[in-house]
Image (cartoon, rainbow, N blue to C red; front, side):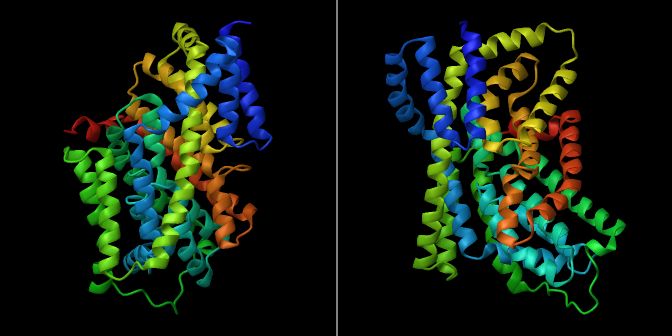
Length: 433
């Protein structure tokens, strides 16, 4: 059996294992060990199991993931999600679909200090959907806005998914993080416009309540919300101007969040323990998957599948944007049957060499990958963020899926804009010191 065929069978077997609910990390490790045993030897495969697990876990640059996730959970358990929601409600509350736009805006701002899409979704959805339902918003529309807002957590830095992409492709992690800023802001604005247009076309989705009193925009509310942009500017801004490495920026951000919250008496021992416990569980899962993904990437490289696939595709007489469109459609299809993290760790080692051989920028493709994964996070039947939102808000899953459907088009439009104007993703990284 040729090495390439071993690689293809490895991918197929792994997809079967995932469909059988085998944990993603275990499926990737198992396929990597068996595949390496066939291509090299069982002894080499077992030796690499221990060596790779240790080597991949101690990569210094990856320590940014637990730091950013920890920072997000500190702010989440301190109630900063509710504060941000009140701030945007005070600004947009009386506009049609104001609460829906406030939900997306609060998600975008919270994503700027949280490395976890799950934390962003749970933090904002838990306070926003109930408020929208109280003022007779359609519950599917309300939950859909919360879910799609939550996906901004993997686009706007700090993003643990961007860090994983950087680790899998060896692109600069700082560059990957900074690349998400402009596309993230653009996508958030487009999502807010979409919510407004949907409510304008169908007022029943977001009726204007005459009885509802607008949340006052007070100085106290502004003072309470200043924590988020301050931490973002110091942590991510420090990475951008070259004062910090990504890991140092994550450490500074987490430390600042903890100190400020303690000084403002928003963090006590109980909330600290809960935040640490939750972040530890999320980080353990993330690193387990990342180690499996790096092992799988090495197996795929050993099989020469990416090399041969790259040579085949570049040999076709097709415009590179046609090939990019095909890749885009593959990601969209996989999003309906697989979790976003699975798509990232499985497809990146295969697709990335093709993207580079076509002359596309690797950091630009990081942003495009995240936008494609966002659609997968919302799409049935897997749609992890839609399922999480349904579980938190007690809105039926079917209604959540219907609520997010119009926003798919917005995410696709955002992706097309990034394809047409790649400078939106590459300008800030190119200016980094």
